[in-house]
Length: 55
Image (cartoon, rainbow, N blue to C red; front, side):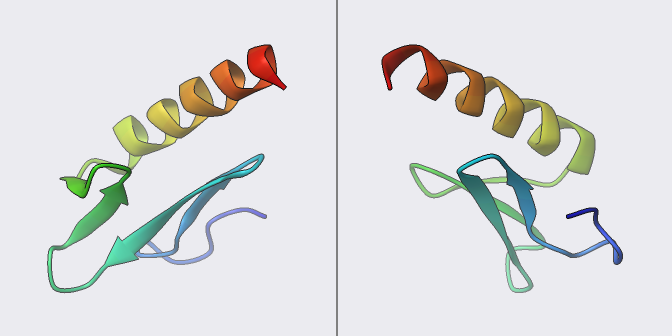
């Protein structure tokens, strides 16, 4: 599903980054926050691709 609003969750395959309104960014596993949507998308794709290697 494509992002329709700038603060939508980012989903790539089985990976979902939830947008946090209070932290104004996407929550990355490990509870760090990414504020750049392009960086969050690339990171989600990288994590999803790594998961495919081990499944």
